[in-house]
Length: 113
Picture: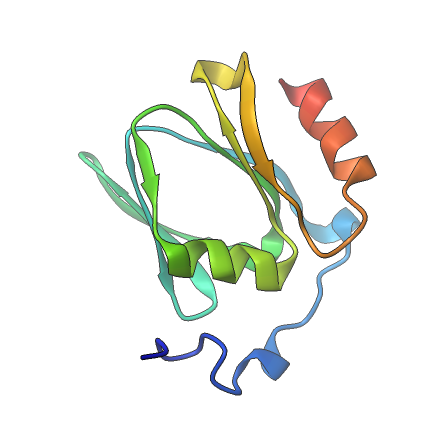
């Protein structure tokens, strides 16, 4: 079954946001990242926060963070790079490619880390 808003014909409404208009990096730790239509919802012990996937260049997933398959789909559709890393981005373990050329985004991620 396809979740509402995910690959069900609604993705034509997702617009590509230029890199210059995006938040450079978001660091998430000790929580759960889920999809809620075209946005992401991060929940931890302190509460929940909505993250517009199309407005983030890269999301760093630090230790203790779980991510749903639908959240990964939303990030891929929005061109948001996901990076699994150690605390404070000290080590990068894995990165999911975006549909755009990731060279500039990865360079920015290295500078931030």
